Length: 204
Image 1 (cartoon, rainbow, N blue to C red):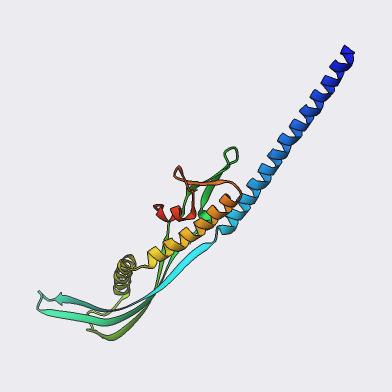
Image 2: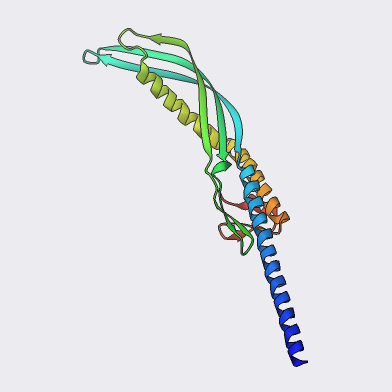
């Protein structure tokens, strides 16, 4: 009788042990599937976020050179009209994340910096130039650089960058919604987000 009870106990122990291992394996499989899905969905968010704007400006350019002990001078000038298309973009394919499977945490480790692209259309009007002081490549490069600097200052003073950042935050909120729906936590700079609105406060 004792041998029978002992044998039955061993059988139950083996059965429970096998089922425990199966359950652990099943939990591990589910976690891996969840991780793979998260990685794929985050990759799908990795698109190029682009905000566009147009800036128009009128410039005047003047230059003079003196010759023969400053007795004679040669001048050139032009009226310049610029229509510049500007894009502020975030390449989210460069977004870097880490997956903490044990704690079910998705960590954003790096958010790509903004990329500002300026494409000016420059047209010259009312061009006058003396024979000894004519427009050359150096003038055009100088004008282009000054216009580029001026447009960048206007971009900084405009809402274009903040609009681009808002679009970036909107894409990051999609990641939060995804992780939250699967029971995971989204983290950036050791901060856990409890709702998508908190993402609006992050410092880029």
